[in-house]
Image (cartoon, rainbow, N blue to C red; front, side, top):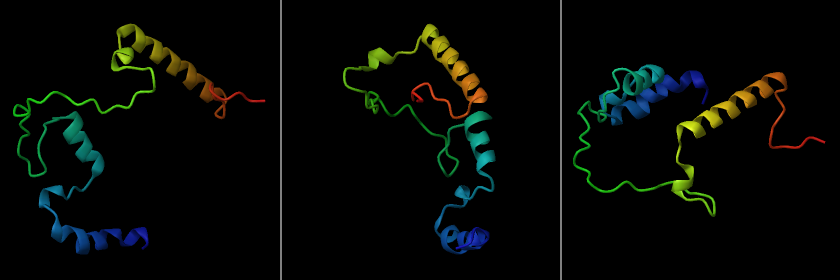
Amino acid sequence: MHWSEYPEAHRQLVKPHMHPALDQPSMASYIFRTCIYPAVRETYDHKPVDLSTGNEPDEDWMEYPKGVTPKDVVLTPLSLMDLFGRGIVLAIGKLICPIWSPYVKMA
């Protein structure tokens, strides 16, 4: 299907089976509204999300490399400054030579 036919296919195949509040005209404006301003947590039908009912402990969903524990990756102000500095160096290196990588040794 050609991309220009997507709006009509959406109207025919998807829209009749979905909640009207889920039909958003722009993904960018939706993300801005829900994540930046006013950033109100709501369900798909505009009801407020109640987070007070879940008293279960948080589940750690990260997979850590062997020998690394969650306590090893705690971010401190000093480690954040180190990561930011390394990012600046990487960005400058990429601006100078886009194919450069600090992890690949070029022969």
